[in-house]
Image (tube, each protein chain N blue to C red):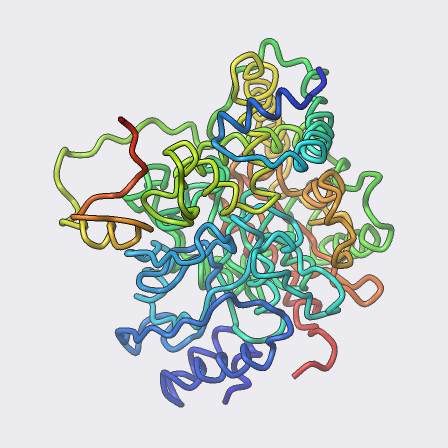
Length: 95
Length: 474
């Protein structure tokens, strides 16, 4: 396949990344080249191979349903760029 | 007394005991300031610390931390504009364990932005320079850590290795770099890039010093669900295991077309030294080695695109000015906060995971990953370790590969397979080519760090490549 500007705009939309118009052409070219590089995967005999998601083959580790950390409300809110009344501030979503 | 900094951890621990706990850290801070031209540090650690017991294993030993390890109350940037003002409320597991062992953090080292790069040139804070030649890159992404150790500022530094980010800069800067088995060291507080590949590691002067540090940072941590619940071996006690009879697999694909002749020759000479010391060299093949770069450059960006979704301009990190809507807040904050390489990898990863392309890219890469891991399993049925050049070239010039992501990816050709399979590996100085260090990579089966470190230590007892220093810099 060939990666084009429409693919790029769709991925940018999915990844919530604003793209300036003059970024489109160079990015499209660079990503197309990287996809050519990984295209070798399409020539490998992979049909019967079980995919590997993780090196250790770990299973999920259950933990007791217990509070392990204290109230970090203020410490975490202090990291936010904008807060008010102990809440994160975002632009209005519902008119 | 301050010469201890140049002699390794044993001398440092002794000096701190005899001359006081703060002496070496003060000297390390002085050296960090004197080496400002390297741009190895993003910030110095100015926190006051609780003093560890005098008998703690690294009491009074200064070290540097790659700036993707969270430091409580101290800015942690990941070399990104996105985290330019980020002050973590907690300390990484690695940082906690080192502090508890008495080591003194003196600063945060520069890296490729979010650890994405092989030259340290993607840092928002500018590239690190290689102490051996200031016109060359130190490698990446742990370039600041490698340069700080190579320049003699600190006797060891932490790094993280997702596709070679400890081993390749160790090779370029002439230091010893250890990437442990995935799960051996907790990732708690290491800012995530690609979670199934990321692994905390160590850069130091010798395998002995790596063993000393690994003994401190290794171990189970319930806060990291991928941390292995296995006992930690006594790596120092195992260092003197003899090389006689050790079977070293010489991996043909690692000496492929892109390997500089001088690099190949230095590595062959190192292997001949191993043979002289009693090891047996066995030619091996890794039939799917050619799939490692393609699989890595799908899996790492895919995981990155997911991990970096958390940077939304709301809870922490950069926020754009005057957002017009929630969507505008997300898209502009992310576009402004991330640099070009990070944005490119997020977009590639998003593409590889998107409907219609998932099977062709992400699933295929996961299948290739299985074949690569199986190659190693088959090889380790015949040999005890696998050897080859860490990187195909010595340190390249600043700017040389900056504009060409493909050329940059080629720098990782011998290291990424190890992360895909989750194995431990290290790079040791094995010679010089045109005045620049060459690294030998040794790879071991999962959790065989003791064997790996012993083999490197034996080589370092018989040779002095790891004692070579860049020029006559102070």
